[in-house]
Length: 138
Image 1: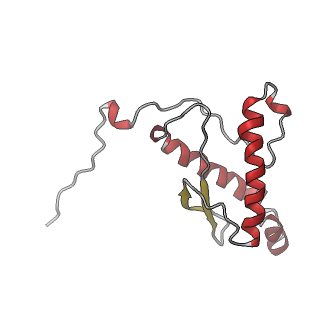
Image 2: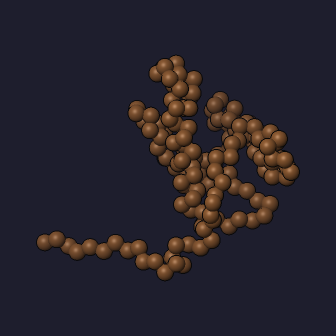
Image 3: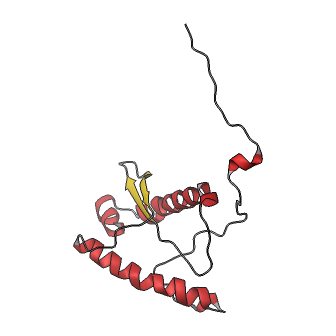
């Protein structure tokens, strides 16, 4: 995709615009539902984000899959699934257990965010009433 944008439009749309947009989409999605996940020591979950790019180079979230397909449905997905499968072991096993994390090869995985706070409770437990009420206009 990066090469396609460079050849088609003459600029690196991925680095200049789309990369940051995709990271922000992932971060905002995961932060918005962090109170719904149960963290268990020694466990991890893989999510698949389906994103779309419009003609103005805006990134749009289509859906998030909590159990993304890992089959070889196309030549592209075969290559990507093989890379993800190999690199996820590097992150889950090697990086998680390393004392010097900066020296661990994580393949193409990149840490994009370190939370400053974690929500332990759903918003309803704070006694907030976020109801929108209205009246019919005659």
